[in-house]
Length: 343
Image (cartoon, rainbow, N blue to C red; front, side, top):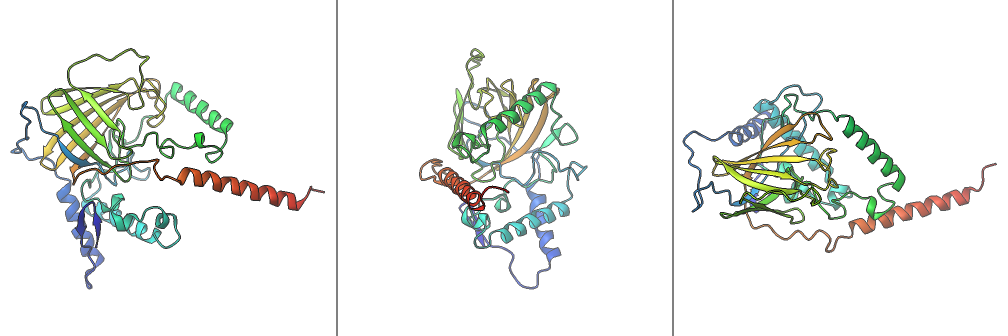
């Protein structure tokens, strides 16, 4: 048995159960959880008459953003999905042996922090991307390729990841993480959100680093292009039973798959059942791709509250990795000194 959020789940450990029957039971869970809304579903509404999206939700999933190169179909069969999921879980169990990185960092299989523990958002899709039909990102255009080249040159100029704190990734530096978005992609763990709404605003609290997205619904215009934010500036409105959020004015410092500060994201939140929000988003950036691309995933109801995520408090990871790198540098220099000059 293991922990799934705040719920205790009993694993299949009874003797005599064949792997085939275990896969069949797992497939049944996936099939049940991948269903869409029924025609008779009545969307709950707030006192203002709009769909009620409030609550705690997770977008934890095994489905990758892009379709794997060896896969050429949009959906797995139920049996294929179950086999893939069980294989990943078994590998994660094997990786948590004493002394390994997962053992000293997070034991995902014990504490339910990884995707294998999430029965919330299973899907038969082979990718989150649904357009283009390939399930993969469009190729970078000439502007995007040139920017990517300059980024690589700058990285070479400033040195390696462990040469300075500033060279580290944004999440290592506790500035922003993948789950904040937009779009709000699966963060791997701590992939939970708290949605609060009233007639004028929708607030989405992101568990990872506790970023809060404040989305006005009053029809206000975007400010000058000189005003740019890490998560862009959102503007929301209701379109039927869907909350539509359009975001622009990104600062370009947290690129999405190589995007620029011209990135625009349109998200749609649609309540399709009591425990599911269909989350669909379209990404456009003329300075990166020559066409837009669209992805969708489920946000499944989960258990709150969200506990504080104080990323830098007691965080010795960045310091220790830099100290370790300097120690390795010193040892390398000492070894070079002991060897003496080449003859």
